[in-house]
Length: 222
Image 1 (cartoon, rainbow, N blue to C red):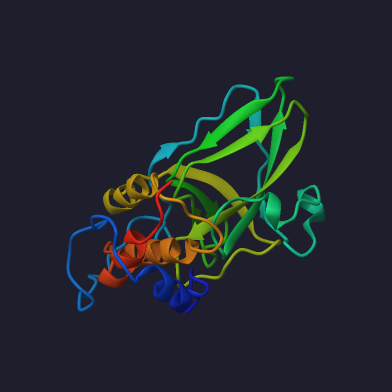
Image 2: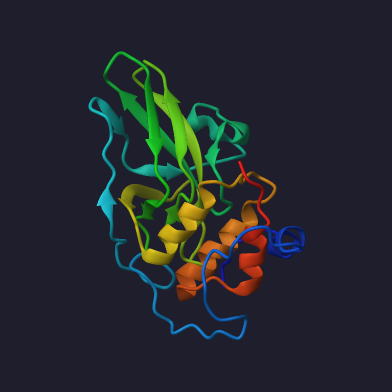
């Protein structure tokens, strides 16, 4: 099994020590047994995710296909290393290449729930869990590495050879509830694994388990 979470044991130890907010979702405890049903594009589902199409500002395009990000040699991403990336996530890392035809800078906001869909059925799709803002300069080409949470824990992670497309903005009920909760939380490179685990819980079972909820509740506020 491929996992969407790196350093999960450490994350749970660090962030599940004390709950400081209302639980993200009601439900059963660790003995909960999933029914095996998942949303389209999530978990074991190989179907396309469902949601609203992303609307880009007029004059702005994203090159297709979107290719996986090579962190060790990001030449194809305008030599931008990981410190220039936006978003969080370990196993779905992509390079967005924008074409700005307006002649002016554009501030682009990518909403939580936006998915990037792999063209290979055995490679994980990715999703944003928090809003990401990108300042796109008034230049014809601009590359931006982006990190995402994976939504298919049994599939392979992205690689520089894997191709993706911009997917829809999903609003599956429990996913949307998680995104709303995270909108007031500070998630960074040190604590994102607990969010990754919450998304894995949901995409595998539509349920966030109690230990994961405790970790989420311990995330710091903005």
